Image 1 (cartoon, rainbow, N blue to C red):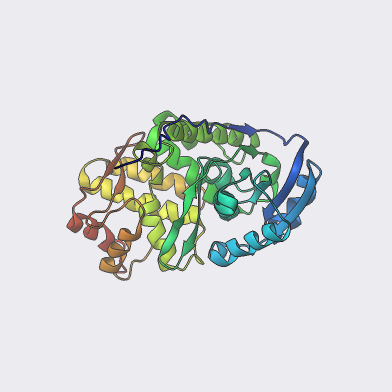
Image 2 (image 1 turned 90 degrees about the vertical axis):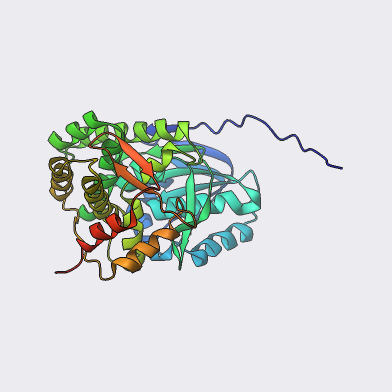
Length: 349
C-alpha cells in the first residue's frame, strides 16, 4: 500500500534587485535589522531614516568571518523569540556577506521560514553574496557547509554604503566582479581591464553588469545543479586557503583571488588557457592590490581538504576551470597528480 502526496507546483521566487538610492519604505509588521557594530556605527542612522515598521528592532552580532557560526545564529534566533516574531515578520540583512548569509539562514529556519531583504554594504556582497539565495554559516570542517537556499524578497544596492569601504574590502569586491567576467563574458573582462573602477559611474556600470550576469545564471539554475557551480571559480582553492588560515588572514575576496590564480595555473597545465591569458588576469588582480600568491606547506593535506567542498563527492572533486577568458568548464575529471603538481608550484622553495 502507498499513499501519494501530490506536491508538484510552480513556486515563483522572483524578486527585484534595485541599484539606486534606497527609497523610504514602511513595513506593517515586526522587522529586525541584523547588522554588526562596524556597519551600525557607520550607516545605521542612514538606514533608519529610510525604514520604518510596526515594530523595529536592531540585532547586532560580532564582526568577522570567524563569527559566522552557530553561536551568532543562536544569538539572532534568541532575540527573535524574545520579541515574539512570527511568520509574517521580516528580517533585513544589513552588512556584508557574513551578515547576509547568516540572516538568510536564520530566515530560512525561523518557524520554518520567514521573509528577508538584503541591503548589502560591501562591494563583494552587492555584486555576489546578496544575490541568488545562498545562505549559511561555517563550522570547524569548512565554509558554508551548513545552510539553505532561501531567496530574499528584494535586494537593495545603494552606492552610499561604499563611500566608507576600506581599500582591502573594495579589492575583495573587485575579485568577485572579475570572476563573473572570466567565467561568462569576455567583453565584460575587456571593459574591466581598461576601466577605472574608482570612478563611481564606472563602478556602477560594473556592478550592474556583474549583478545581471549572476541573475542570468541563477535564473537558469537556482539550486546549483549545473551551470551555477561555475560561479565558484576560484572558490574551491580559496575555501581551502580560508580554512587553513582560520578565516583570519584573508578577506573572502582575497582568498578567491588567489584561488583564481591557482585555477588558472591548473587550466594552463590542462591546455585550456594560455599563459598570456593567465597573466592578464593576474595583472588585473594585482592592479587592485589583491594577493595572487600563497605558500602551501603540505600539498597532500591541501588536496584532501578539497573533499569538504560542497560540490565534491566521496570519490571525486569538482573543479571550476576557465577555458580561456569568457568560458568555463565544470569537471570532476582533473588528474590528481596534475593538481598536486600545481599545488607544489605554490610551495616555498
